[in-house]
Image (cartoon, rainbow, N blue to C red):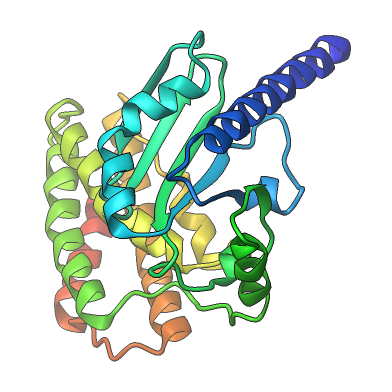
Length: 272
């Protein structure tokens, strides 16, 4: 069993390395790509068989980037022309960001950047350069090494909007689960998690105890079990919200009277 796991790991890494080789060949042939580098785990040389590729394609100006962006699907598929791929624009993360999954299991995140609009960041402190023009990428990496790390941000107004939506959607799920319905509230539950958890998890570091409670979300056919879980999720949310407010020093004042009343209802109903 162990031999098969090791073999599979080596195969996966070989596929990733093959994509990197093909990517380098492609960017070297693209005149408008002034520089290309890998960030993330490949930049830090901490990649493993399950790492994705964080690819930065850098252009000299916005016009060349725009022209390349119009051909983004053609480009990502040409990296491995004999390996089928699916891809999409991740505008919800940032502009000019295209994510691709190749059928050999390699996932690649393509950032389309311009030299003038790419500020040095600690994220690019360690990079693996695949193409460079006039030493720009080396200079950029040196500047990134001096950049100060910044904490992920969540403003008080953003937290307030998140909080308002959480309470309403939470109760919408909870009341229907109490009714014995595990079908209709499931979609609302997914929306609740999608709207609430990513912003909090993004801000809280892995070592934050309050973060761990958010990772236990589940939804099962047993509505009584789900109701009990929702009570635990509410407790975990409040702990995470408190940790975010403390960590970011936000001016956020909860509606204590409202929250105490709802918590009392949840505790009474969930234990019946």
